[in-house]
Length: 255
Image (cartoon, rainbow, N blue to C red; front, side, top):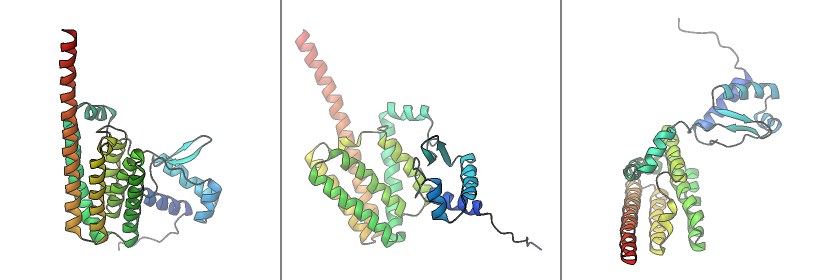
């Protein structure tokens, strides 16, 4: 018979499973510090020795890391998504930028479609809250904050799609974006018309999600990222033209 004796689960195993789930679901994020041992043991209602056993196991598996004098942190599990050599290769070639945007368009359109169908009311409240912050930042003309909130808005949609593989894959994509590997997001916020258009596009995405209109949410994301691609292509073309113009000017002034 395929039955096995039932044995009580060690408390440390229950702690491990809970922390693993929080990391898997993207609730605990890479680099995030865990509460101090005493506080965490109290929250989990376990003894400190049981908690230490769980933390030690999670460190051995590479999900947590300890920094002397600073505490225990969620490990940078996304760090191995792309090798340093590949990241440098991306940064040196424009075609990687546009392949990146194409990939984002496909994945985020799917995420928006899923979120419209599967997100809870709380998920959609998170998306709406981030968008409200985007509107506030727009009125303050805070370019840095606008760029940061732009990434948070898109990540909130991915989180609301409730697909943990997509979540971690897209988080690694945004880490590269925030690091300036593909392009500087601030380029998109330099012109007044561009800022207004971008905000309106995010408004359309948010409205479709709040209405739970999956087709409209998908279309709004595709429209937005098509616009980003065209704007970046125009920017790169303008940079090349300026370079040529400077060469001509230098030739005329030195001739």
